[in-house]
Amino acid sequence: MHTDPDILALLALGEPAGSDDDRAHIASCPGCTSTLAAFTGAAAAGRSTASVPALVAPHERVWNQIAAAVGADATPEVSSAERRERGRGVRGRSVRGRSVRGRSVRGRSVRGRRLPVRWLALAAAVVLAAAAGGVTTSFLLRPTDAPGGAPSVTVLARAALTALPDWPGATGDAVVESNGADTSMVISVNAATDRPDAYREVWLLSADLTKLVSLGLLSGDSGTFAIPTDIDMSQYSIVDVSSEPLDGNPAHSSNSIVRGSFDS
Image 1 (cartoon, rainbow, N blue to C red):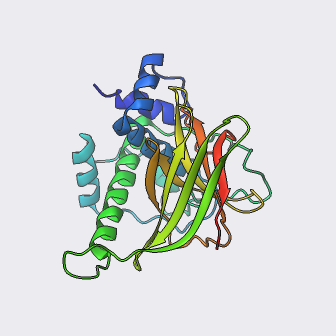
Image 2: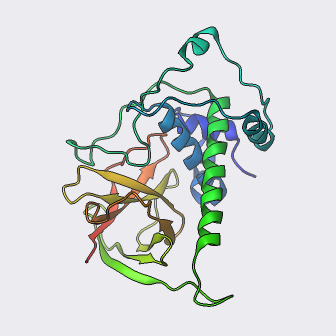
Image 3: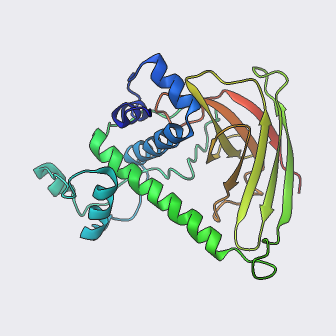
């Protein structure tokens, strides 16, 4: 039985929700871990503070599809204050880039205003739908050597991952590959088991450790992660795998398990 979505949403918002059993289940359940990650991403987007273009109201069918997916009313409840705010630009930080220029990876982001649990679920549904669409598109556009053949893959870089002080004996490796249409990183980690209330996250870091990009959650000992097209690998030359607590904070925990630099 999966963890109640309300508990997952509250954890994503940084609330001390759920029991020890709930947190242990989340850590061992890929489905609940994925849902928590989507909620956390939606919460981070809601806390954003850097400039983005003015938002455009989505078509009614978008709300209908999201509502059908989460079993909610498709008509948003808008307060008079929210109506006054519509049409203004939204200032927010890029969740994908998570630029922390001038501050080391050790700094954690400051929590912002909380989002209503219901709309956090709706936003997370958008995140999951977008991710699924991206995976489908990537699969459909991959070139093949021949009809029914496997994609031709070129290895672009490799990194040997070594243990950080708090994780003696941990090892790993990462390989960056391209099939001509997209670029991905295949990573494997051999390390002691995390605490039941923690999960692993994969990052790309700048050489001076002042900028970082999250590629996603590592479920198990290995995984494949898409590298966004706007990421310059010469600027993000370090791969890092961290142990992250289930506290709803999307910033790096400073608890790195393994880390290594890509060759060229």
